[in-house]
Structures are given as C-alpha cells and as structure tokens.
Image 1: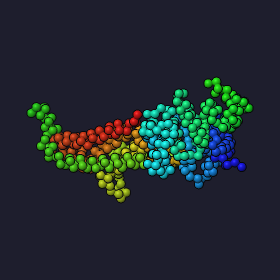
Image 2: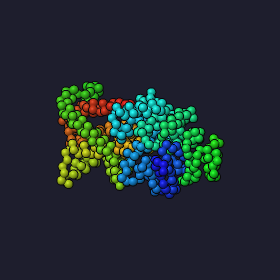
Image 3: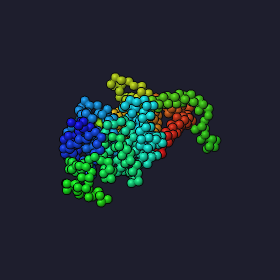
Image 4: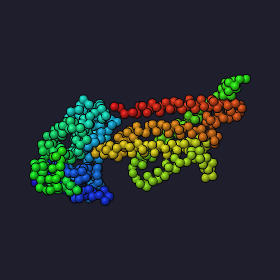
Amino acid sequence: MSEPPIIAAHGLHKQFGPLHVLKGVDLVVAERELVFLIGPSGSGKSTLLRCLNRLEEPSSGSVVVDGIDLLDRRTDINHVRTRIGMVFQSFNLYPHMTALANVTLALRKVAGKSRAEADTIGRAALDRVGLADRAHHTPLQLSGGQQQRVAIARAIALEPRVMLFDEPTSALDPELVGGVLAVMRELRASGMTMVVVSHEMGFARAAADRVLFMDQGVIVEQGTPEQVFTAPTEERTRAFIGQIQRH
Amino acid sequence: MSAWDRFTDAFFNVPIMLKYLPSIAQGFVLTVELAVLVVITGIAAGLGVAMLRSLGLRPLNWAIVFVVDLFRALPPLVIIVLIYFGLPSAGVSPSAFGATWASLALELMAFSEEIFWAGITAVPRGQWEAARSTGLSFGQTLRAVVLPQALRLTVPPLTNRTIAITKGTALGSVIGLAEILSQASSGESLSFNPSPLTLGAAAYLLLFLPVVALGRWIETKFAWKR
C-alpha cells in the first residue's frame, strides 16, 4: 500500500439555491502530484477547488486534507488552512500593506511568529519568487505578474502541504504569464503537491501528472496530459479541447 | 452717527465683548467637552455596531437597521426634547449636558454606522477570501485586512458628518445648556447689543475651523500610496 493521499474528497455536492454546481465529485490527490483541472466556465472547477479549503462549504460529501477532516465541526479550520495555500485569479493582495507585510501577516497572526522571525521567512519567500528587491513596494507599485508572485509567496511562506491555484494567470497580460508559470514550475520541482485550475495547456503538458476535465458539475474524463489533450475519449472533452486549441 | 458706526457699535462693540468674554469662554470650554465626548462615543459606537453587523446574523441586523434608521430620521432637537422633558416622567432626570450628549451621540452613531458599513461592504470579497485562506479568523481578517481599507473610504464622508452633527451642540441652548450660543444670547439680551453673538460666532470658528482643517489633513493622509 502506498502512502495515504494528501487530498481525499468524496461525493462532493454543492448547491447554490436551485443551482447544482457540483454533482458528486471524487478527487484524490497523492503527495507530490500536480493535478490540472480544466473545463468550460460554470463547470464547477473553481467551486471544487474552493471546497478543498472550505472557502466554499460543500452541501454534502467529505473532504480530508493531510489526514484532517475539513468538514468535522471540531476541526480548527483556521489552523488547517495554513497547510493549504491558495492563489487567486485576481491576486487579492492587501493594498494597504507592503509586499513583505502581505507575506508576513498570517505568519505573525496565525503561525505565531515574532516580527523578526516572520520577516526572515517572508524575505526568503519573496526571494524564492524572485522579488526580494520588492519587499517594501505596495501592490499598486507592482505589475500584475509581480503581484501574483507575491501572492504565491504569501501562500508558500506558511509552508503548506498543498497549493491550490485558481486560474492564476487568467488576469495577466500575456507577457507576464511566463514569470508566474516559472515560479509554479519551480514549486513543482521542489515537490509541492498542487491542484491547478487553468487553461495554460503548455504548462499542463510540461508539468501536470494528471488532467481532469470537468463539465456541468462532474468529472467527465481524466488521464495524463497526453491522453486528455491528444486522444480524449469523451465527446464533450473533444469539443472543449478543440475550442481552447483554436485560440 | 454714520451707518458704519451704527453697524460696528452693534456687532463689534469692544467694551461689551470684553464684558461677556469670560462667560462665552466658559461656554467654549463646555462646548469643547461636549463635542469631544459626542465624537468619541458616537464614532466608537457606530464602528462597534458596524462590526457587529458584519457578522451577518439576520435578526441582529434587522434590529441594527431599525435603530439606525430611527436615529437617522429623527431630528436631533426632537431627541433632545424627548430625553430632557420626557424621561423625567419615567423617573430619570438627565442633565441638559447628558440629554444633549445622548441625542447627538445617538445620531452620530447612526450615521457613522451607515458610513462604516458602506466602507466594509466596499472592500472586495477577495480580500476576505485571501485572508481567510491563510488561516486568519473572521475577527483577525476584519481588524487587519478589511477595516484598514474600509476606513480609508469612510474618512471623507465621516469627517463631514461628524462636523455637521457636532455643530448640533448649539441645540443644547434650547434646554438651557450653558454652551457657546446660550452664553452669547444671554449676553445679547442683558446688554441689548448683538456683539456677544459676534463673539459667539468667533468662538464657533475657533472651535470648528481646526476640526475642518484636521479632516482635510486626515483625508490626504489616508490616500493610497502609489
């Protein structure tokens, strides 16, 4: 028996009123695996991702991350979330703080580090995303790509066991995408477990272990990037891959 | 006597002004005390209520909206008269100072709550989500991430509203509170000369011009650093 999966989500349903966004999704991610989630907008991929750190409360099902049941009422969700990094499409940096303060806030408030300790860890995280020299810039003084790299630093500073990426490059100008993907590749090389919602197919081919195609709240098809991108078995997958390749 | 002399004799009569300067100075001190108390308690209460409202508990929020709308709708003079002349029938006799303070503080609480609430709701959802995803609690997120951004947005409307409501200290004159206006108008009726009123107006300028300037300074101070 291999080691237990780091993410084990089973039978996930999510309903927003009459809208049934997730219809029984199972997602098991092994340690050091990079799973890529693709699918048309409204397919439920972002909702699935947000259920994995309980930013979204599943209507039913179970989510276990790193052996901790996220939906158990006795679970200290704030503590678990420090082990699950998340990166958002719109960066969501705190505009009233410097890059370094963005990175160190949770280190001080949640991880209980002193300011000096937090600053040391924060600078190392900024250095890792190539922005050591931007520590005292505010988000408005940074480009979109730099902001997203600071957001990645904010997440990795807490030394998470898993990283969730919700369309990390979708809000970026094309010339800024490369820098963010380079940071993600470096994370990948260091052995970070990652779940990525994105349409960067080149990145998926180069780095993903597994690609999942979602549509209408279910996982339609999954396999290696090669299988899913070049020889999809489902009609819906074929249609979607065809569409994104034409652009 | 020329028209000009008659005018200066009526509004800038120096001997009369000097005579009533001490009582107006007393009124000035009382008005400052009342104004500071109203600003601190009214804004603190408004911020506290807005923070409670952000918890999103529906019955509590209905109660908050009801109370806030009540005190935004009632003229402050009506509240002063209700408290000062009404409460004694219920066995509580507030002082003129207490009645004026309570009325203005409640009004400032109501208006500042709405301003703070507008600021809190204007902070994008993504800010909450980013902070919560790093493990910050609701309270930590509100304090460290949301309120600092919300407060920047609230500074201009809040300073305006605070100045407008604090000037309502003059309403205390209706129930005999010895603040600036009350001292100045009793000076006017005793001397049969409006010069004490000029002095009173000068005292208000002395009090509120620095407040207006402070508001301006805070507004520039709170602008985003680009």
